[in-house]
Length: 423
Image 1 (cartoon, one colour):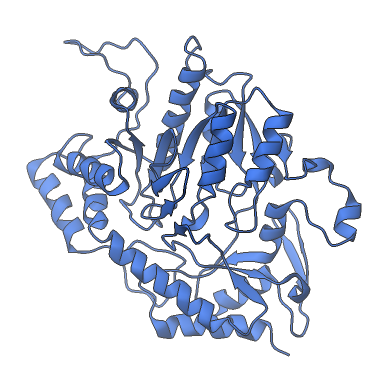
Image 2 (cartoon, rainbow, N blue to C red):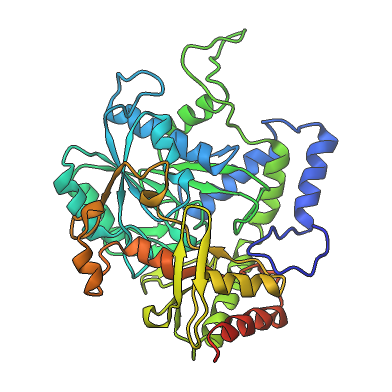
């Protein structure tokens, strides 16, 4: 990419191998949706994650959609195309990007959002158990690993097995992260029934775009491969007997991702060093870094901070606008993001929880206490915040985490944050 003094949130990091693989694809004229890069990338991903099969697709969202379609067909084999989840509730991580959830609607399902827990900023197992009490017929759960930090999969898998529910694992942000539990262990992308990762431009491994469906079941891999190429049948002509999609990855995109994959461990080490430098730099501030369990090893994709509640200045957010009042010794996410931008650095608010989004605010939402949207103001007045995700959104932000950022550039960001809490 072009030289710039801007400190990015997380930009692509391209090496020499990517250019070579793309060059080979162009010179051999294999630039469409078949070719050596696709084949090799699928092998690399399956081996890296620890699954038997991988199918390269046009995006992580496409991979999640076909995960949803597979799960829906398993739950209702006689359903019509696009309606495999009709009238079915699907429990979804609440604090995530909407690509985790939109495929539920693609298949005519009904998302119900599960609140976040404070230990990993992921789906709260207590809230999930409460949700099964409220919606006992539910048989599908979509779990996202936020910012490269594995969710509490031991507890989540136990709960899902107890209720005979399938798990779609959205590992879009968590390639290279791992989890070593007593119930389930392995790399993120191998811990569910249907799994997806992303190669979007800002991910720890990028193809500029693209995604991957991961599975141990050859039948599922074959179905996804067929669906992703418009469900063309094995016939001398173009024969179509079921609904298909134009979801296959191109050999050019695969060449970029293939080269980038060779540097996954290096990228993780760089991201981890950034996280640790932030943690050391902020040790005297009223903030904490995005947390993870000892049984998990994140990929440190994005470094984030959470401001202590007593150190928050007054802040209000509308749908698209915000207002805050600066106070000595206090700050808020929007003030810090402005301060970061002033030193030519890119930050980001924490994902706004799905249950707060206009598109989804009429859908169900369950907390550990089961209150959901009916939470009493008395709890808030007493300092309790049953809606953990909304609290993290209010007090948290993502810091520049680009693995090409120098220590000197990071020091500039750290000093900008420190000034926000000054007198």
